[in-house]
Amino acid sequence: MATTSWTQICDTAVKTMVFNRFSPILGISDSNKDLVLTPPDIAQRQIAEKRGTGSTVEFISIWSEPVKFDWARQNEPIGRKGLTVNYTTGLGGSNSQIITIKAVPVEMKYNISVWSLYLDKIKLVVESYSKWLYDHPNLKIYYSGLYEMDMYLKFDQVKDSTDYKIYDRGKYFRYDLPLTVDGWILSNIMYPTILTIVLDTFLREGQAPNFRDTFLSEYIVTSMGETETGTG
Image (cartoon, rainbow, N blue to C red; front, side, top):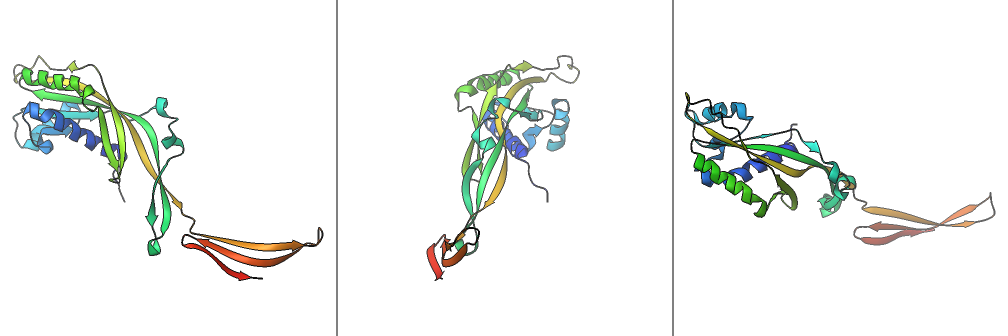
C-alpha cells in the first residue's frame, strides 16, 4: 500500500508556510489555485490550468532539489541511536511495543518564485523575505501530532529572473527566493516490550563433573507485579 513520504510532508509544510507569509502582500487567497509545486519554466502553464483561464496574475511557484545528506549533523543521537517516544497498547491495555524514531539529517533546498505584474509587490515580498530571518526562522512539524520537530531555515541571495524580452506578451516580473531547510527523514522502529520474565532457581550440589541441580522455586515477573508459582 502506498504511503506518503516524509519529504512530501515537508514539501506540503513549506508550501503552506510560504503561502501564509507572502499571500497577503500579493493579494492572493486560494493556495490550490495561486500556488504550484512545479519548475518555473512551466509554472505559468500550470497556474493557467488550475484557474481555468489563460490570463495570469500574481502567484507563487515552488520547486525543490533532491534531498542532500547533511554531513555536518550526521553524528546527531537521533540519527544513530534513535529517540524512544511512547508505547503501543496491546491486549488488556498493556504496553506491547516501544516506538523508537530514527532520523537521517538532510538538507532540503527550495526555490520560491514569486510572479507579479507589479514590481512594487515583488519588492514588498523581498523585504518580507529579508525579515524572515528574525521572525521565527524554522519549520515546525508535529510527528504523530505529538512530537515537535524543528527544522531550521536558511536564506540566500534573491535573484531577478524576469524575462525582459517578452513585451509582446506583457511584462511579467519574477523573483527567485532561495530557501534551505535543515530537515530530517524519519522512520519508525518497533521494539517488542518485555511483559513477562520467568526466573527459575536451582540448588547445585555435588562435585564436577557430576553436578546435581535441584529445582527450588519459580518466579514470574510481569508488568502487574511479581508472583511465585511453585517450589521444589
